[in-house]
Length: 217
Length: 319
Image (cartoon, rainbow over all chains, first blue to last red; front, side, top):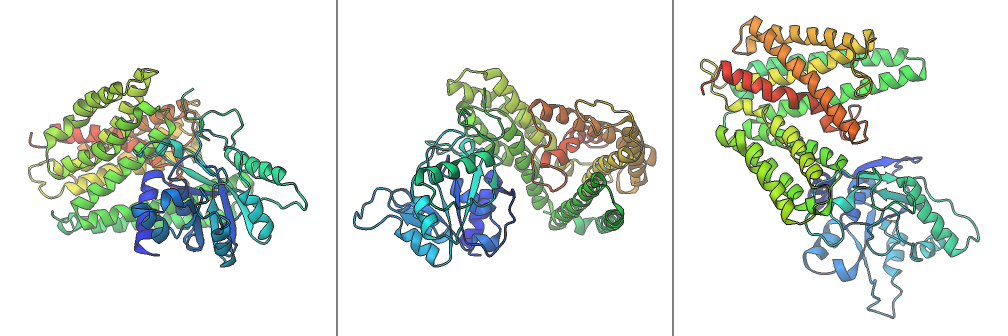
């Protein structure tokens, strides 16, 4: 492991624990996967990445927005320590399909961490999923689609805050999403989102992004 | 900084003895796991084996800390306090207005409390949390202007800080007591405290599993029984008395000290179990396999440490 990566994993574990829990699936080490999760905090990517066993982590690349992670120290963290794939949310280069760097990583045999909501939310239930996950699922039928639910991280570092508060976060990995032939795009995306919600035990009406129910009533 | 083991060769014997105890426990666990037949028995034995394995890790961490000296020992206890506070805060409801006081608790108060032990400032160590943290953290929260549930939020943070940081820090604070005729040997007292607390928990668990009938407080802690407490407590007191030779105490006083540790440890487990359940959880966390969270393992230490510290300070140490 690179020293910068080891240090990063240590800091993340000290701050938020990032304890991986596998439900209905074994963290088999040779599977190529797309991990897709709910998104409430800047720590989300790091938490999933740190929760993976080392053998999986070294072949797993987070997907990060170039407009945020593409400059300065953040860029160093994202690309050097995490090996992130940067994508253009804003389509700065309109000629290029924004999913192209993701395809390249998948073709190279790497796994990806992505947040299909596209941006961070503040609620327990994730927002509507965007279509990229569906396109990648169709184009790479052999890649496992693994739902992930992150709890508590909005309390550790919510959207709009720079002040981290240490908080125990459990990273729940669920069984791979089944593929259904000819399933319409929206039905697939709804099913993927439901898989994440089931894993976290959250419903549409839960206010806070918190699986333990610890938020104030 | 003097090395703790280098100065106290007894510690080699003590940690060697612990390793022997754990080897026996592992042997028993292995034997039981071959004989378990019902699913319930298999579960109980699996949990037992997980607990024993976790004990190997915990003893190894402490042995290395003791071996490498006072600074590392303080660092290890500081991390324990950090993890315990993290578990407490995770289960406690918080609001946005608590973020700054919470951050300060983790990043300033925890390091400062253990640093004060390192630089041997007993006076400041004793009042830092009960005076400065107690008054300033709520004031900072008040400046944030969120009054909803203010008293409840403030009280919870204070309580968590007192238990997980202040009370726990009294264990390594044993290192700064000046006991005539016992100079340089305080690490043995720390070992004594931790050993008696933990052997008491283990013995109460064993006696409870074997003979437990009468539950003491079924709602708070279904596993605590009169038989477990009395049998385990007496066994732990006997262990404590038998270890009088590593303390400044006579055998009778060592037994009395061990009894005080046992009772406080029991009360700590009971009280923190009540807190945990009032927060709607069964375990404080998941970080120690088979035991639950850090605070599930430290609840009894948090209650026993300050009382043992002050008993020793009052009767044996220079003021």
